[in-house]
Image: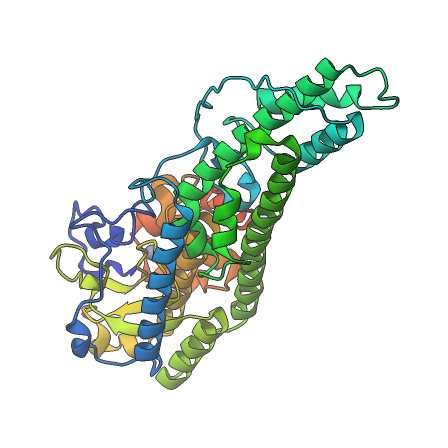
Length: 421
Ligand SMILES: [Zn+2]
């Protein structure tokens, strides 16, 4: 949200400025996120002719998102809960998610006999270890006990295998199965809780068939055949790596686009036409549309339309609002010169920074930013999007929650580097 201080009353705590805060995955009744309102006819401008098409497209995207959630969520009713899982640690460099402890389920150790050759047993072990690369406990650094056991077994498979007894081989196979099943449990948790989140981050463009991924999360037969389990795990690992690579690509692309718009400026003598042409350019470059909407378009339960809010970005965790920013029709200065103020370009960049952070971290309000998230958003736009800092600070004089200092600049850098908590 981009706010001007003109009408703030003493003791106001930002009020409307918190409208796009909140957990990423939930939509609570009365929360700030919701369906489109019908009030767009009040808009003084239609900022883009693509609005209708974009809305239709985003609705289609929302359907896809819902389908993906349904496909990938293997347990009922918990997909949208903002629960941290042990798997959140896995590939945290990609997801930037906050971590918290998630005790592994204990399962009985497998004790079957397999009658496999030493070569096959050790090949399965090696494959399993490769699939489980990067798997950690909920602290993000410790290898799960099952993986540690596999790593210990690896020494037995080094060199001459003839010394391995059938009991040794059975033990290795059972360890392999146990580790793969435990790892799969974590993967199921990961996708159960993160599928909507991932869908948002990658703009719905899954790098493969989610149904195949779902099938690989099914461990039917894994405990009956260690060779099959190792093969399926390798496929699942490949599918998951593709998802993570896609996220990395999206973030890299985002950063490239940010660097391009950093050079798009409007000086203080820019005409209204030049200002809005610049806004057209930066939104096009970022792949978003903009429009003029009442603040309530994000939902908000009748909190009214804050007249000091210039622009805003909605985040409801679906694709509906991922690629659009809004200017507030309720901004009271539109007809008193705001349209011709080059600060509108700064406001647009600020909202685009909210969006970048939401893609990088899955929320406009990552843990690392805490209550300073508006200031961090400004800092992000100063650092990476060429937001005119001096002009913005003049316009936001007295708005402490937007004032970026060294601490906020450092946090913005960390978010850009992939750290969100
Ligand atoms: Zn903001």
